[in-house]
Image (cartoon, rainbow, N blue to C red):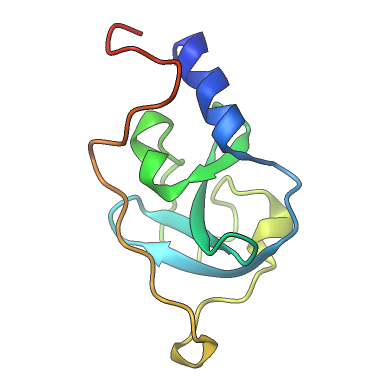
Length: 113
């Protein structure tokens, strides 16, 4: 990963120890978990190379490690995030959209970076 992209992701991201996740939902596309941040209503994915949680629409910049399936407890996500309950229909939270293959532009990063 190019340094400018990593830095931009870390600016947009949340610390590895972020504790305000309330739910998690399985992403069939990325074969990993997305985590719901109750503070901003956004979904996040753990970005291993950036060592932080990034908005789910940025997955393509730093894809999560693939898990064997939703029952795989060792899928590269920090353990504290994995303690979040799985999203249920009773939670009054919208299911996350599958993250795009073409992520949005990052501030401070040109196409050449």
